Amino acid sequence: MDQSSNKNVSLPPDHPRYESLKYRHKIIEGMKNLIVAEAGLIAHGRGECFDYILGEKTSKTAKKAINAAVASFLLAENPIISINGNVAALCPDEVVKLSKILDIPLEINIFYRKEGRIKAITKQLKSAGAADLLGTDEKKMVNINELSSNRRKVDPKGIYKADWVMVPLEDGDRTEALKKNGKNVIAIDLNPISRTSIWADITIVDNIVRTIPKMIETAQNYKHLSKKELMEIQGEFNNKENIKNTLDLIIDYIASQKENAFTILKK
Ligand code: PTJ
Image (cartoon, rainbow, N blue to C red; front, side):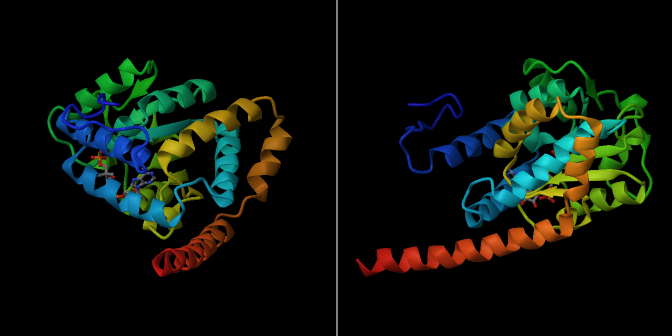
């Protein structure tokens, strides 16, 4: 029995929805510890819904986007990974590991600025081993243009001067603002037709809990490639095409599930 993630609920590892329940509990615990915003629970539920119709696996289109994202990060001059409450609750160890392998700082940037949240997220990332952590000192923050939400406050050493920004589980307004400020954006979003997905330069339509380990693996392989090879991987990627192909995969998956469901019902 895995009782670590929620003190009141036992999760038998052989439960058919074990993985999904495990991450739900991480989000719930994160909310109790101020890491996750209340709205983060709803955002997680929306993500689960999209993950379901993607077959809860990393698709070949997501893998293509991951390759392009890692190549772009290795070519970037000032890359940065933005961290919000959901990301900090779901995969703190993995984002810290990715940041170290790629030598890219993490910047905490949250939408819901409730008292104590930055501190709680900082603590979570520091216990996961984060060394290079930006966005922690309110006094040092500057505003980016084109944005009225709390996300406009960014670190001058991070998002403000970045050329490539990765924004997992993002709202559309900020992705649009980052683009208008001349940034290249990598999104991780299970919804392939969200405004974030459409605005981003590289859209990884996948669950972050699968994406980050795959990015780590890819980074370990790509670190040895030449600049020319990385530029080829980046240049071959077409985000619009990739999103269209992802939508086709969803349509195919639903069609296959329709057949399965009817076979089961007939029994
Ligand atoms: O911690 P804060 O204050 O910065 O707030 C974070 C949330 C997530 C609450 C905030 O950014 C928000 O409201 O986001 P949205 O507008 O709900 O968008 C979140 C997107 O992430 C949606 O398109 C979801 O489908 C998607 N999503 C949710 N869970 C996952 C995901 N994408 C990838 N992996 C997930 N696990």
